[in-house]
Length: 291
Image (cartoon, one colour):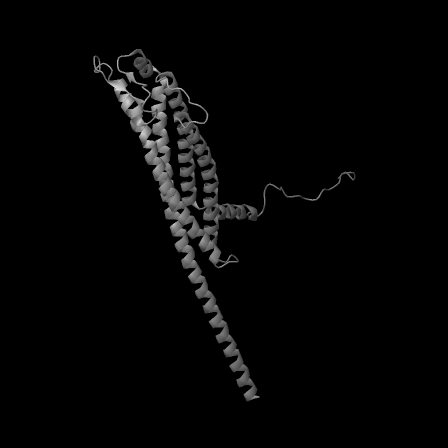
């Protein structure tokens, strides 16, 4: 054997451990615990709420812009002075209301999601360090009341959104039956919807050039379908509010029951401690009497 050769110690392959790696199981358990703590009903309701509000706000905003274009191009309705409250001013106000609805319900959905996380944690960690307080129950009850009010508000928004859908459906159905209306004196008058004052005549009659241009334009068809999508979004928001009411009511009931269970466990442990103290005292007395 060559004397210059050095004998290296035997080393094990680090990629071949001689036992199961404890870190993999811990990571899996951590992931399962994190997934188990997600309030899935609140998550589904939040996604539905965001989808409905986004559909209502986006489609409603574009449909209002299309309505302005139709009124100006085909009915020749002009914008009044700055101080006057005409249809264009009302449309601008509704657009600003849409901006407020989008931002407000974005924040409200986050708050409801956070409340769902805290409520789920309170139920799951009932016997841990987390204690259910009266403030938590009051917050849940407050969210229930607020969500109920918002649900009624969205019912009103849905009913209000159905009005332009009905109006555009009438106009769209007339345009689809232009061949039947040949020779008829049927006119579209925005005064009957309160869009323009009574003294202003802004009619478009079937068979006229403006009527055919309006029916063949993309503005009418696109605005009609955008209002339908906005109505669907408002309906989805109503369904999300109802879903939230069910989730919040169930969470409030669970928290209330868990609070009662917590009080029962505290009283039970206190009685057991008292019985243990009494038993220890009697045992010491017997031992002293014997000695």
